[in-house]
Length: 325
Image (cartoon, rainbow, N blue to C red; front, side):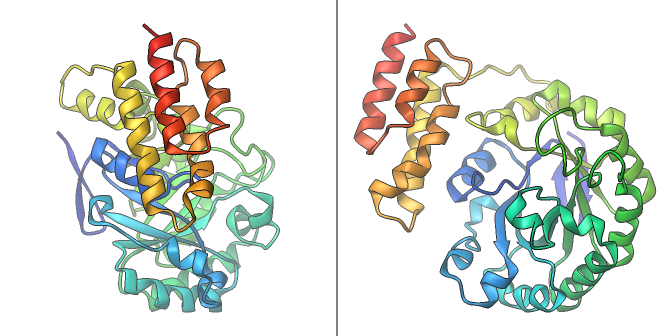
């Protein structure tokens, strides 16, 4: 298997798990790492929230060994808060710190953070420099290809990131205005890769091992990151690893899907700071994703969104398997 080097890490050139707020929590990251994701990243952590001693922000910083190599991702648009947050975050010993400059969600963009920083490259540069100055570990940037179709500035922005001290970039091939719709433009990712000397990770529309290989071939990126295609499908990392090891990949059976789904729910309940009756609500969407593409999925996905306990999840899984005999 081919190896690549990002920062001081030597990694299999397969696929990493893309950062996903509200989805890729500790349980999710651990499962994907076990299945072969070569890198993981935390959910978005508010730099300002961390500075104001937000309990929620601090909880997002915890790292378990199985998730490594792992980065902690900060978002914010004020260099002074980025600087202070970087100092605070290092006690959790991340392998690197990632700055989110790609999130398209209004509540983030409206503060000038996330993908809004692609409209203010000078401010983005100051944020990166502030982070690099205070950090004892490498700093990376997650970005999009631009704000909209009329303002695609990924190449120029990537050079600014590199000049400001970023150690590597992760580029999602969509604009902010696209959100998660339409098609990712891999040609812009290729242009970014050709424009900078630091490593580039490509992200967007990789749904299989074949897609992964196509992205490598068409963009020349150093690594591919998988995001939404891992929803209810942590096995995608096994599929990709098997492809590069020239091994046959066998998709999970319905029984295996239910076993991992239940384990995922148990992990969510174990790791959550919330009481079980609230934590189970966070598990509902994950449970539903494991049923995607299966027989009678629609009926049982509706049941997933009504789960109120782990025992109900067990019963739902049992009934689902009976319906899929």
